[in-house]
Amino acid sequence: MTDKKVTLTLQDDNSIELDVMQGTLGQDVVDVRALGSKGLFTFDPGFTSTASCESKITFIDGDEGILLHRGFPIDQLATHSNYLEVCYILLNGEAPTQAQFDEFCTTVTRHTMIHEQITRLFHGFRRDSHPMAVMCGVTGALAAFYHDSLDVNIERHREIAAFRLLSKMPTMAAMCYKYSIGQPFVYPRNDLSYAGNFLHMMFATPCEEYKVNPVLERAMDRILILHADHEQNASTSTVRTAGSSGANPFACIAAGIASLWGPAHGGANEATLRMLEEISTVEHIPEFVRRAKDKNDSFRLMGFGHRVYKNYDPRATVMRETCHEVLNELGMKDDLLEVAMELEHIALNDPYFIERKLYPNVDFYSGIILKAMGIPSSMFTVIFAMARTVGWIAHWKEMHDEGMKIARPRQLYTGYTEREFNSALNK
Ligand code: ACO
Image (cartoon, rainbow, N blue to C red; front, side):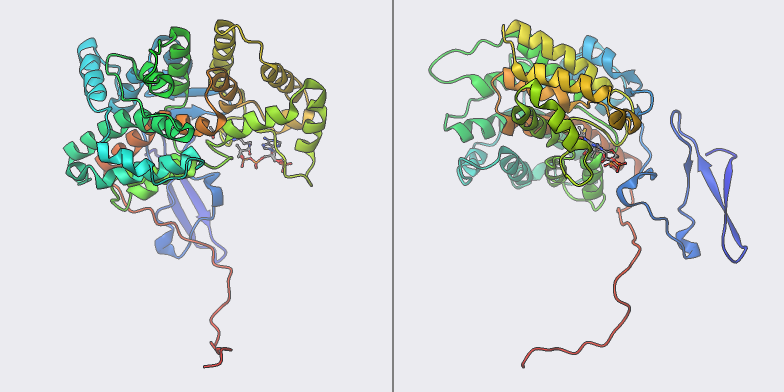
């Protein structure tokens, strides 16, 4: 809280004084909680000017292109850390000592297997189901298998559920893929890194040994780091909202996965690759740029624009570098990368995109990397969900640790006023 106040003058010349809250970084926030008792609500669909909670986990300055996790800049984490260390930081607030990190890794790697009966759940799905549909269903179903960690009021239960989710997500994500291509599930290997183990479960078969390529392992690790958390985005807010009623963590994370699936959010990486494939050659770019600018055409340049970033998404910079590293390692010249780079160049020099501050976001390059690794586009959002699980859990835990109120927004009602009901049915 600051000494600053905001005075709201009403039509009848009455006024209401509202406190102004100040964080360690970022905009001041007007505390409007007193308004409800004065018979007034605020109106902000889409939360464009609303802070829905207080949080110490992640800070974004969209104008400057800054992203900090617990104060640490994302480019430093992406360059000098690894995904599990970032998970530790997000969940615990501080960078771990070696001993703390070793213990954390041991706990995560000891919980990577899923209850064997869950494997049968997969067989209830059609093989051609979208893997996000399967991921959503199976994650929610975990609550039916791990009854011993469902009391959200007990801190130890929350911790056990957090480890279970973090550990089992890659196993389930890889199972979604294996099921879709009709191959046997591959069990986790605890001697591998988080990213390496995921690649192993994706690509190993019983017929031959799969050797994890360290460049691809590092690239996957970076993708996971860059997607780990992003403060109060749609899916994280969904997890918080679901959790605010006291719902169990597995149900909350399933709700987050459902929200992430949308093409305006996590589904954008899959949509970006589809768009690049549709554009196919640089000659077609002007036509797509023209359509993106046409108000009568619903087409948008996928992987461009962000609600918060009005500058280059700092994650996109690292992603672009990683993209080049992976393609070099694999000795691939990808036509889609050429299209992506040219599209980025054209859009960044076009007044439409400049005026609206539309820059490439994290999803612009991730699809090309994943495709080069041999991962089908339907799995892109699943990998995003796997990476974001730690962010969702960190926010869900923070909300419980700090005490919460059920999320219950109000509305501006514009429907009928009261009217007489006369049934037209023959009774
Ligand atoms: N292509 C063309 N025009 C765009 C795009 C785009 N990708 N994004 C925004 N615009 C235009 C809008 O038409 C609008 O123009 P107007 O002011 O003339 O009406 C203006 O830019 C502002 O757009 P809004 O939709 O109001 O911005 P908002 O903050 O609500 O949306 C969003 C952000 C959803 C990310 C949007 O930019 C978009 O749809 N991008 C494409 C999808 C995408 O890449 N999503 C991934 C986001 S990152 C993530 O979730 C990991």
